[in-house]
Image (cartoon, rainbow, N blue to C red; front, top):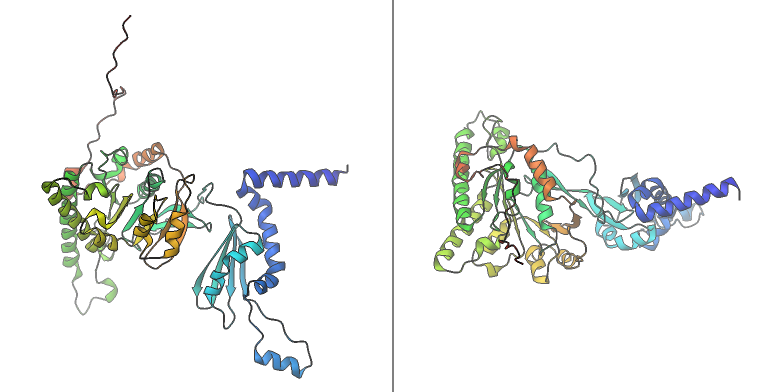
Length: 452
């Protein structure tokens, strides 16, 4: 056996091992080259087979007849850019006259099969320009966030990885309020931890409502400005937030000073238009289980519940300009939770659904957005915790998965940035007490020594 043969066998064996055990490494070493060559050499035939070509124009046919040349072939979209990425290929196309971006989107599955890629998605950048993202392997199977993400914009958190290899950002200024649904053990809590871990280094006040006796959010208390663990405390906290919101509006009103000499760009309509030294700190309110706030068993609890939902609806309707953003989580969010719930849901623009137990729960998130997103949500398997479908009122949606963040990792991040916790006077009564942790464990039951 020659040295060349031995080398070739070793290379093939290494490629096969990497493709099986480390698909990301295989893609960066071998896969990206093979995929780029396939696209370059098979592009015209694949586009013709997928019906993405246009017949020659009349003037080209007339020119061919006049010069006695063969009839010109149909033309596919022109490639403007072919760029490899760490998860696949980025193809930017210029559509021919008569083609539509929907044609490319409808042919995504055929393009995936023809080019031998794992997934293909497309989106229209502007009129006539379509960006096709191809992934070479299942990026959601083992989530690895990029080392560098765009964190320059305020209130924009990289929270998960999309199925096309891009980063999913939770942009509070673009989508101020959001709803997160998911069954037990679906990865909803991990998604919430990633949000808290991403917000911890920012200049933002975190407010938590965790009526499961605080088991989810109270370990992160050093980074929270206010916490509530019972419905009664949650009501007082939400009403204090409404009062804080009204005070912020008074500040904005006092600083508007609308005169003929003030340029339009300097007229304040929300906290982001105020000067930096006057701008109040933005507040993110995380509700861990909204059903615990909406359920009641007596007349007194019903009155409390109505006041809680009213305060949440007011914050959702008016809080954006005052820099108050809602992050509502729950297993279900339907009309069975009582009056005012559907009004609140209509204000939650961002929607994220992890694995759900029935189609009705998926409809609660995406029924008014996209039927395709509902179908994708109910198809999430039970052995893929963390996989979710996210969308907004524009109708666009995608599959995402947040990297696994343990509770210990989230606690360490919050403790590291505890000095950034702002002290809001309106919420001072709800600031969590940070007592030193005792080393002794408290037993759940009293043990009795065995007697002879």
